[in-house]
Image 1 (cartoon, rainbow, N blue to C red):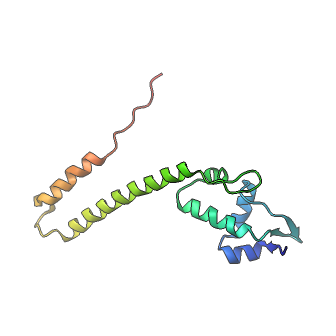
Image 2: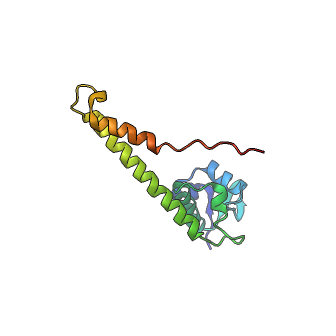
Image 3: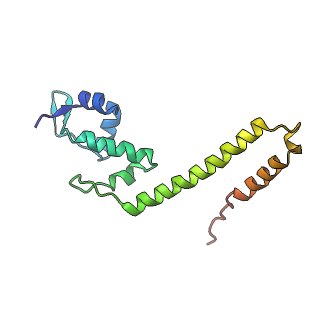
Length: 140
């Protein structure tokens, strides 16, 4: 099996050497050996890096990502956790879509003043209802 050095991994994956070293430090990946001062990796590390990149884009922390791999490095996708994250992203999409629509309206509103615009007033009231209630700290 042909091993890939850290430079090849960086070139092929787009992941910086410092990030690779950090991933190794926190136990997400591991090099097999060294050739001089250069770390050597098995080719399948590229797939693992792609999975890490995808999970990070999905909002998972490195600790959560580490939990997606067994001690032997086998992928163990927590389907329910992935589903929950997808649902959260759906909610964010809805909120961002509503925000985009409000911003378009504000930019294009024909009213002489936004405060005179009934649509703008409704949007403001709807915005107040969407604010999450502040959680009170637990009492002891």
